[in-house]
Length: 174
Image (cartoon, helix red, strand yellow):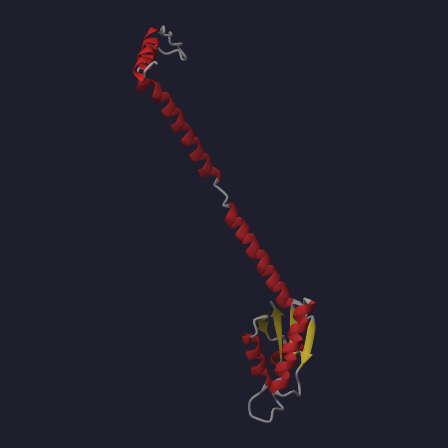
């Protein structure tokens, strides 16, 4: 049986007996040119490429595609929000003559129905409170409280004087 040492010796003998191949000259430089001389042109090429790329970037700049997408989404969102604010209400409820409890229950049912129907903007007519039995209006503050507490409700505001003014409130449904 042949030992590992014998195999290793045979392999070393084979390696030493191989004829050396003559190196094929790749460039037109001398075959014994130093290593530093061969690297300089490569460094110069890389430096020139870097300078050219920097000049191009300085001249034309870069586009941050993620930022462009975010700005576009924000513009669309703002247009949608502005559209919803300026659009006419799709449904209206009149709470005149109701007590706070009755108005709350009707408003809750009305908003639920509008949400199921996919409506985006509603008008709530609550009146200015001129005929309230106390000194302060009753339904206006109750409607504001309802809007603040109900998660289905979004932005709200009062329409212009021709459409109810402070006696009505429009609401965007989320």
